[in-house]
Image 1: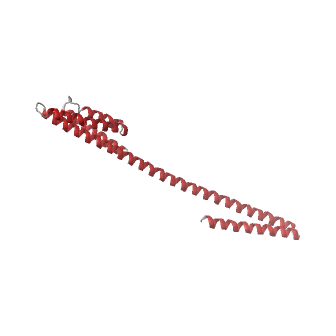
Image 2: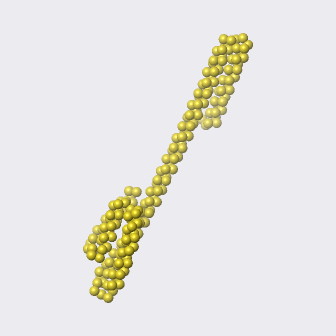
Length: 189
């Protein structure tokens, strides 16, 4: 039953109770004191019952409204949390991807330099390799800022594998470890 119909019902019951009370008073004045007194007591009891019913209905309506608002707030919180996590995941994915692109580029320049050793191109290749390390450092900063500690540690190991004295096999294993840590971090969040 909606609140308007409920309110109309309670108002009707209260009106009936007041009419009965008025009749009891009129009957008491007309000479039926005992009958009038019982009628008045009955009318009072009926009026109190109507007031109590109205209070119970108001309490029930209040509780139903509170539960509905709580449910709507929970849905809003869940939606905002999901949106926040999705945005955070995208920022991390972008940071991890940028770092991976920078390390791949630096690794390619490192390989070109290693292949060019002893040739006239060696110095130019070395300079390109060194220039390619700067974006790696910048991208690593973003990974440290946005990534989880496990991803940052894997990224640092991958950066170290780009050192000119690092063994070639170290790069592939560090790259694989970074990819694994990144995928795990992106699925957790």
